[in-house]
Amino acid sequence: SLSIQMLRRKLTEVRRMSSGRGLMANSSQFTVEGKPFRILGGSIHYFRVPKAHWEDRLLKMKACGLNTLTTYVPWNLHEPERGMFNFQDQLDLKAYICLAAKLGLWVILRPGPYICAEWDLGGLPSWLLQDKHMQLRTTYPGFVSAVNAYFDKLIPLIKHLMFQGGGPIIAVQVENEYGSYAKDDKYMAFIKNCLLSRGITELLLTSDNWEGLKCGGVEEGIPGVLDTLPQRPLMVMEYWSGWFDVWGENHHIFQADDMLAVVSEILERGVSINLYMFHGGSSFGFMNGAMDFGTYKSQVNSYDYDAPLSEAGDYTPKYHVLRTLFNFSSGIQFIVDVMLFCVPGRHISLCLSAEPLPDVPSLQKRSAYHPVDVQQYLCLWDTLRFQLKSEKPINMENLPVNNNNGQSYGYTLYETTITSGGTLHSMNNIRDRALVFVDRQPVGSLNYKTQELTIPDGKRTLTLLVENCGRVNYGKALDNQRKGLVGDITLNNAPLRDFTIYCLDMRPSFMKRLSSAPWKSVPHKPSFPGFFQATLHVEESPGDTFLNMSDWGKGVVLINGQNLGRHWFIGPQHYLYVPGPWLRRGENQIIVFEEHKSEEKLVFAENPDHGKTIDVYKLPFCTLL
Ligand SMILES: *[C@@H]1O[C@H](CO)[C@@H](O)[C@H](O)[C@H]1NC(C)=O
Ligand SMILES: *[C@@H]1O[C@H](CO)[C@@H](O)[C@H](O)[C@H]1NC(C)=O
Ligand SMILES: *[C@@H]1O[C@H](CO)[C@@H](O)[C@H](O)[C@H]1NC(C)=O
Image 1 (tube, helix red, strand yellow):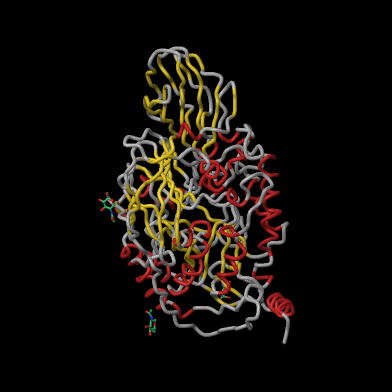
Image 2: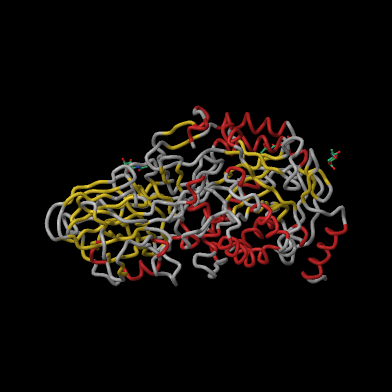
């Protein structure tokens, strides 16, 4: 029998020889291997779905009749510190693409480097902001060299997964929505060349929205040669299946019937489509982005998106209407030859007939565990160990921590001594909000709206606990996303000096240090902020669940060291998705960092309650931006 290597070589050869290109486009039609092809695509981001659930979500996609998976690639996760790369475990992009291939899905890769995606800084690493002259998404030398170093790592990893190499990737997107940013007319050519010069020969796409189109609710991809506009749209690269949510506003929904009408019309016109999102998942931890078109608004952790599959992977009415629709239009379902490289030992199977849709996978187990008692407590002030000193305030990104890559996410605490009371003024230098303490007693908070606070008299300790609520991911405000204290704070018009600074990034090393701190039983009236600990005992193999944080105040929840994300009483999100694979049989440690208000118990729910909803279709679309 042939070896895998030989089969792979053979397949590669066949593909090179046959009219044998992957995805191609003329003015009216896509072809794969020379045969007409319609992309029925859907976006699922591997970084928003626990790895153990990837296969379940992709099988559900396949069973809905889709033939192509689209995903972004988040640079900030893959290179958390300059030159330190991570493509393992949850970030094993190669495994994700191979899984798609194994299940018979083509892949359109959107490697950015900027990805938007309601993701912190649109996926750009925060350490880029250490350079005070940095110009993101331009040919500024500091940006160019960082992109080159990243692509030198990324592209060789995925190159052999291209169609031409026997893999499933049929197209690669160049940057993302640059048309709406357009600061440097040499930049797109630079990114295109980043791909070409590293051997990417598949079809290159751009995804662009010009505001008018955006207001109509679709974005149009421009396939083919970058500077050639097609006669008519071949593909809607981002057909928005729903919408994301921001803190303090209602949960967005988009009715299945309204979606069906548009998707049907797109298909009737023979146009290809990508559903953004097919399954949104969660922006775990501090990875949410923010928007700022005059007013800063940070996004919630749930990326449910009112998509065909819910945050926890459940079927929604949209899923079922799409499945019926895609089944009906499957006259042109295709041929997916098994990717040898990805599935060693499998035969090449060229299936030329339309396949019936696979059965819908059964739903995974989900539990509402019994409420657990909050047993232990740790005052924030008892956790402050590792400190930095600085005469002037330093923004998070420039703190000399993490091998001089700065602090990327979370909270930073700035403390100094004051000799009198008076008027504290933030000078709008707080990103994004701060709790203010005098002698470690709360006196108020500062944010974009409230910039002034009266401080009582006397020689005292003044503390600002500053929270980075997420960096803007879209629009011109992208340029101005340093966090923490980004300039002077004044007391009676004199800038404060001589700070002691503590990083509270809630990362594993921080949480580990916390475990050796002096935890005690929860006092009758705990002081805030503080950490609260509970233990969840799981008898059988753990299933997914939701934590119902409705009665808590504001903070962060970690389970077995994994940062689930933020809770905030203002909503709309009150339920944090807890993936079963992050739990274990036996004892599970839950730690809540809480700023204002705790409860005696932590309560679980099988399903989230989205609360008050608002239909995006009934809004003038531009008001969303
Ligand atoms: C585009 O390609 C399709 C499929 O190969 C072909 O049928 C069609 O005639 C082509 N159209 C043009 C304008 O070349
Ligand atoms: C798909 O279409 C076929 C042929 O019309 C039909 O037999 C089958 O039941 C349909 N499947 C679904 C899931 O609608
Ligand atoms: C979540 O907690 C709130 C407040 O205790 C309660 O009113 C609500 O019913 C709970 N939700 C679920 C789904 O159990």
